[in-house]
Amino acid sequence: MEMKDFSLEGKVAWVTGASYGIGFAIATAFHTAGAAIAFNDINQELVDKGLAAYKEAGIDAKGYVCDVTDEAQVQATTEQIIKDLGKIDILVNNAGIIKRIPMVEMSAADFRKVIDIDLNGPFIVSKAVIPGMIKQRHGKIINICSMMSELGRETVSAYAAAKGGLKMLTRNIASEYGEFNIQCNGIGPGYIETPQTAPLRVPGNPFNEFILAKTPAHRWGKTSDLQGPAVFLASDASNFINGHVLYVDGGILAYIGKQPQ
Ligand code: NAP
Ligand code: GCO
Image (cartoon, rainbow, N blue to C red; front, side, top):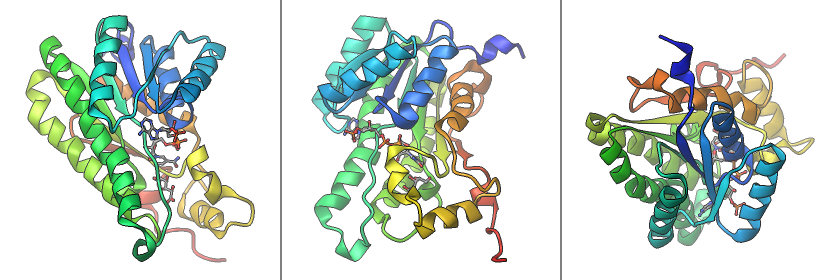
């Protein structure tokens, strides 16, 4: 093994929904490792916000307005990224939403929207990108899964269903396209400090104490905790890892939880 195996020099990475949050952190880590960065978000305002943030970080990222649930937009964006940057070596299916509503109170429309973005989106984007990876005989797909790929909890039925499905989509892409030197793996973040979890971290919210008790490190994760694992799964150092979900959760899945004092 050589340290260059962990390098992304000369690679082109597309991170979906990466104007901020986990996607932005992963994209900046890929840039540090040598990759060229493409990202999309759902509207021009968010893309512009992301471009400004990447520029401030010294990154000449390419930004695209693209709704990952819209096949035509995804196909057009795939073609434009290849036109602009020459190829796509790495895809991170990061874009996602959550709706926290008790299941029996959740509308079918809300359930479908979460499934559409968090599960159909990764299918649509992967379907658009894989043909190019087959032609070049290499590719890395990283699906951003969740604790909810393994566990349920109150109010997140749609999200858990989507992220459980995303774990199995990850395994199926690995199974179907591994012969073309395409590795598809997942990252399962624990509870990370981002806008998506901000409502859970408000002072006095018992959920905050609950998560600290469930995490051996007794802290929320930071987006920076995900950067090394993402670079590893995007690099040649992980070429014989396929269909795996790497949980970056501070040990939540291993821990019954801190006993009450
Ligand atoms: P976030 O802060 O809400 O960012 C999600 C990004 O995806 C936003 O930029 C969002 O744009 C974009 N997006 C939403 N729908 C889209 C669509 N249809 N097309 C394109 N972009 C879309 O979330 P995050 O916390 O960074 O999470 C990123 C990923 O990690 C998600 O898949 C999430 O499920 C997963 N995850 C998060 C945690 C956590 O603790 N934060 C833990 C495990 C997994 P808008 O601003 O317009 O919504
Ligand atoms: C929630 C949280 C979680 C995290 C993450 C955990 O409401 O339980 O939002 O779903 O976002 O997915 O891995």
